[in-house]
Image (tube, rainbow, N blue to C red):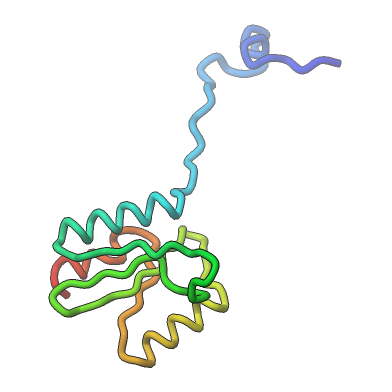
Length: 118
């Protein structure tokens, strides 16, 4: 038995002719979210550094480090379904225990308050 093509199924009246494939929304990639956040903060006057993970890096270190007017913020970027690893949770706890600021950002909206000076 062979499979019917979409076109042939439409010709036979099995599938309505006006049915067409709709694009499936794909979740945004972490790298794209990161780039958007970095660009937004730079536009708001922050000096932003992308932390590249490599051999010898501190395990769990955040993706971005931002500083403006003496205020510094560590930013871990995650997709809508991403979770912090055990090492990232530990890093976050260390930063916060020393009075540092740490944000888990899933979209630029999660850092917009920084642009407003808040």
